[in-house]
Amino acid sequence: MKGKMKAQLFYGPEDVRYENINIPEIGDDEALVKIKSALTCGSDLKTYRRGHPTMIKEASVFGHEWAGDIVEIGSDVDNFKVGDRIVAVNSVPCYECYYCKLERYSLCENLIYNNGAYAEYIKIPGKILKKNTYIIPDKIDYREAALLEPLACVAHGIEESNIKTDDMVVINGAGPIGLMFIALARLKGALVISVDLSDERLEYAKDFGADYTINASKESDQVAAVKELTEDKKGVDVAVDATGIPEVWEMTILMGRKGATINLFGGCVSGTSVNIDTQLLHYSELTIKGVYHHTPYYVKKAFDLITSRQIDTVKFITADMPLEKLVSALELMGQQKGIKYNITT
Image (cartoon, rainbow, N blue to C red; front, side, top):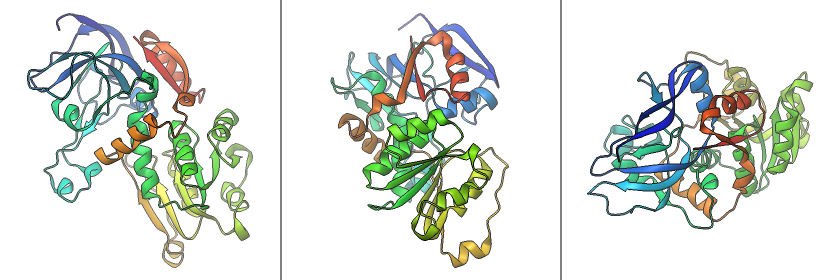
């Protein structure tokens, strides 16, 4: 398809421009999609503010949570057709590197990324089209389907947290990812404590099933406030960070009881570090882990969660905003106003 399209281009930190660019040309194994919904994301806010390793070219279209309609397919594509309502995630593993052979697909050394949701059209690379793309059932709205990528990441994080029925779980951060953790932890049968600085976000946390909320800005000792809610003040069974702030990582570790699992899910700025009491780590037999990204297995799990409506996906969308207002939507996220914004073209 020849012609021009509107798109938001990332030139550098806080330098995003609304421009006319060429509609992408597809190869034989690719598809072109008319975007019907593109959602704002915390990592897109980080990209806008400070850049991102996957945004290596100047004037790149960014955004990676989307759903839409196929308008053109390559000659080698036989599993989709023009007119299909589809959703795809932003990457696919190579299946050939050292880590893929270990089946640690989120650690793939050659992940194929695909950004470009903040535009009228997006091209899907062949491998993503084959492995990480799904047809949206008629009963599911584009906005709901577009949650696939972040929900796949959280499904991975929940599974690695080893949550059992009646476990007490604390989730630090009640942004979009933290709220997804709350919803999925509740599905596991856990009791959930949500900690955040914003009363507005803590109200969202309650709506997604948090049993207890703590406003960190009103507590001199957040760790003690969390432990106060646990049996004999021993600490939680599972502690999750969804903030990506080193100081909160450290507090998250301290919130766990002996033998707890600590999931440091929120990605911190490169070059930062945290301090861990070695005696606490050793004698309390803590399991501390980082969890990154998604895999095709968790993409399928997330797709099933959305299509079965096991979580109320509509509640994640605060409002619709036009493509030309993208920066305003990201700024609202940065001010912790709302959850996600649906960018329309």
